[in-house]
Length: 154
Image (tube, rainbow, N blue to C red; front, side, top):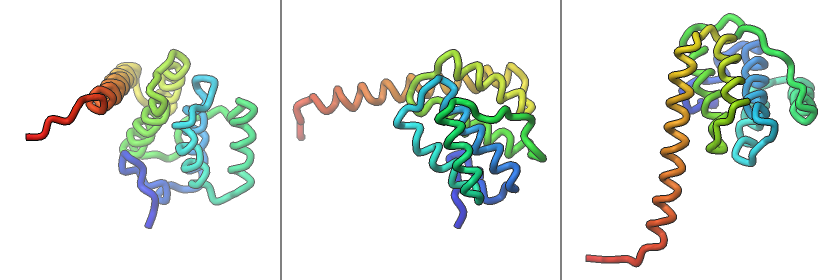
């Protein structure tokens, strides 16, 4: 059984060049803000798991540590559906720490162009991601608030 990402993308359906591109893109998303939040580690581990070559995975790990990931060109041989799924996955990665900063927005604008998306589509998806962050923050506040209430059983 292959791993399925939240968007439904199955990395096993990608060729090795596409898997490498996706792994580098995910690691680039993780490091876009200059640090790696604990919430983002699982994304990096999953991305490196796409790769069959352990030496490629080790090179990417070192590049993450050095903050010198390879520059990405256009996504190779992708369909529009796969490119959309990849872009949404990258949005989820940059939002994992519930912060969407300027460097992450710049990353999304750049990677959006590599995936063939215009500025307007990227802007719409960034707005959607921002709304999701607000929603998650409110959820945490509601959980905290509810936890502090006295039970009122009927």
